[in-house]
Amino acid sequence: MVQDMNQQVVFLPEGTKRTRGRDAQRINILVARAVANAVKSTLGPKGMDKMIVDDLGDVIISNDGATILSEMSIDHPAGKMMVEVAKTQDDEVGDGTTTAVIIAGGLLEKAEKLLNDEIHPSIIVKGYRLAAEKAKQYYAEISEDISLKDNAALKQIALTSMTGKSAESAEELAGLVVRAITQVAVEEGNTISIDLDDIKVEKKVNGCAL
Figure: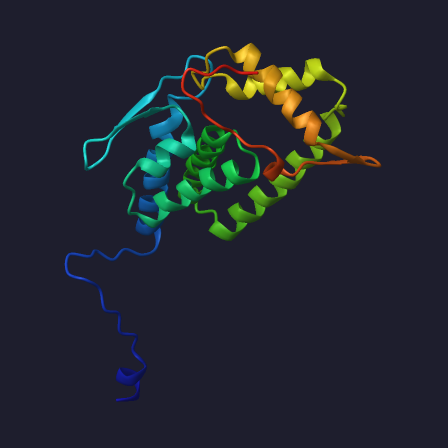
């Protein structure tokens, strides 16, 4: 009688399937990799645009990872986590959303092989965390300082971010972006702070970039 009282009771909606253990791990990894593959072909200078048609028939064409994933109907929790990866990357950096999702998918692919070799998930997670710390150290070592007066380097960074965005007059836009950022940037000792609220992007029909 005591054992019956302590037994866990789980209520699930009709049609719901419950998986656990290795099967749940495989399904989660499979869904996450499928999401990563959905945006994989948009990466790089030869990346292709994706056409998304929603339930209302509206068409969206983009090769931006965050935009594509936000418009996709993803219900699986693992898939939603991949969408959050893209959103977080977009909020924190503003670029590299597709790269972040593809790397996450690649790490999960390697993790699946380690799981098949009977390596415990906690050990895999610990290894990835150590690798992340090592990667940050390496990037800190090879990084280069850029001054606000180095317009050529700043313009090249802006052009890199625009690559694949189907932006017309990229050269002119890159120069405009650099001018806007340098005007609102505030130098305090060795640090540079920029308040994005000081920058406004405004569209004007038949207008031109000034």
